[in-house]
Length: 184
Image 1: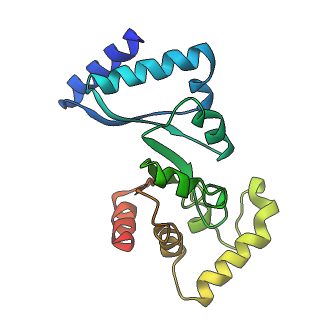
Image 2: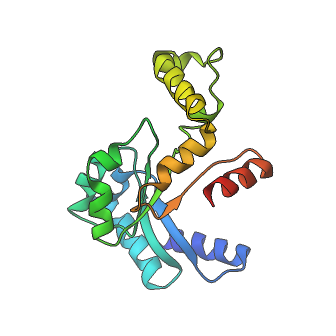
């Protein structure tokens, strides 16, 4: 097992004055593959066995990454993007498969890095220019249905019963309060 990782976790636990971290997620599925991947997984499993970490998981960008990992390891948690424009985790049937295997699904990118809530028809970053028509349709749909873009994004994710948690980024306490209010 990876002793420097354990020392780092012990240091974090001491600093936070807690006994256990709820979850530790690998950032890249490649960290589970090959010799180094085996060492990473053994180190994480050791932390879990010693009850320093409750759950270990994986953050993915594409459901195809789960295909590569599934053969060697079943994580406790999978964090994946899901929003009105990116439904690959749902369309691939991985949401059902993860749920059937009692694996928590944490959804991120529900606001598509803020684009789905901040976009205005007349203002668009150059890198998103190719999605201008789609974003305009999104705006028009929200306006026609008299729903804020924020509420539409949150309600979209909430309709998936296999999602355990929604991970969001905020720029202020006010934004967080607004998200919590809509979510509840």
